[in-house]
Image (cartoon, rainbow, N blue to C red):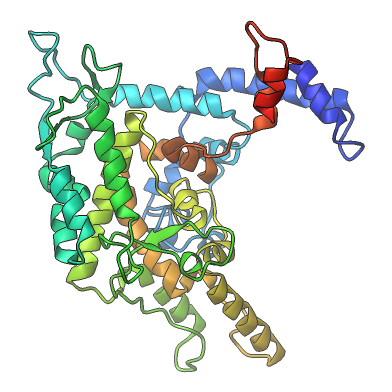
Amino acid sequence: AEKSAATVLKQLGDSLPPIKAMLVRVSMLRALNRRAHFALPWLPVTPAQENSSILGGLAGFGASPERAGRSKPLTAMSQWIQCPTVATRMRKCRRLFFGSVKRAHLDSLLLATTSPTPLSHDEYELPREVRTVRVNRLKARRAMDTKSATSKKKFSVFSQLQHEMRGWSGAALRRGHVAKGHGGQKRAFKVKLVGEGVNDYSGPYREVFTDAMGEVVELDDTGHGALGVLDPSPNHVADIGEGRELFVFASCGAKSTVMTGSSTSVSTEEIGIRNCFAHFLLDRHENIRETEESVQFLGRLAGTACRHGIPVDLYLPLGTVWKPLTEDGADSAQALTEIDMLASKQLKEKEKSAARNASRSVCIEWESQSDLVLQRHLLNSLADGLSNVLPMEIMALFTGEELRDFMCGNPEVDVDLLRRVVEYEGYEEDDAVISYFWE
């Protein structure tokens, strides 16, 4: 491993410290992670500040300023004492811990929080605690091919699962039963595919997660989400920016009531307090309540798939979803640019114009923009759904990118790295067939 690292470092030129110094740092990181592997189960990750009404959180409500979706993200941190605790230092070291160390710690927590399931008398039968979910994919496909939004929301695989599991507790979804002859696939329930004549030996179980997630990101004729759960981001619609494949939580006509500094009758402090709690002041109606329930179930479904090693295709933004979930301190300007580049440019132009005119609104509060406020509000529902199934407190050790890759898988394959570490059996590296393979 050290020879491979030295070979890579030589190719980087003189812009880095000497190779020996770099190898010493790598050795220190390895020593740190060897100790962290045994120490993480004994160290706190949640600061005591979050549970304190005096020193904890924004306005003393007991939630940290970084809490996903529940408070104003970054600007409020300077207004409260940040106690130097072991947990805060652990969060700052999240990028020093190896992914394998953090993943091993998470796997141990998932195992510890798994709901116990007694074995059946017949080893080939599932226990009665593992419930059966009936899904009619044929009816779901016919409904998704129609133009009726009501039919889609009633008969889709996602909606059928939501209806079947409406009264289920988180403990039911935290089961990890492995049946004999099912290929080692963990499961929380059994799937009965109506009209297809197949038995669930783990294949249909994985398929319902894939079908449900595919329906969530499916578009209707108007370009919106077919189920009203996720909508394509403005960058997706306009086909601009880097994250053109991203989706955001559906607004369903909800509007946030943020305030700007244009009104002289309201003080800057009052505007800050109002915008800080703007995600609680949405123009609520029945559609937004349905969206909240659907997004919460989406979190429960994604968390169940994550527990059982099933990657899900959730093309959600890094700055407004994955980083806030890990309390990684996402920049609001970058988060808005990731989903709506045109709105970000307009705000930058407004900021420059206000600076030239010496206006009182020179500093624009990016995190108080209506798009981000609505996403932060619905992120609460997703976080609530995930927390029913996953230990979300431990996610503060991960980065936003690591959580995204952990739940959705990493779509990128480093061919050069694969070529350096591959081992050949029956062939040599300079064989013609091997050269054709890599080309």
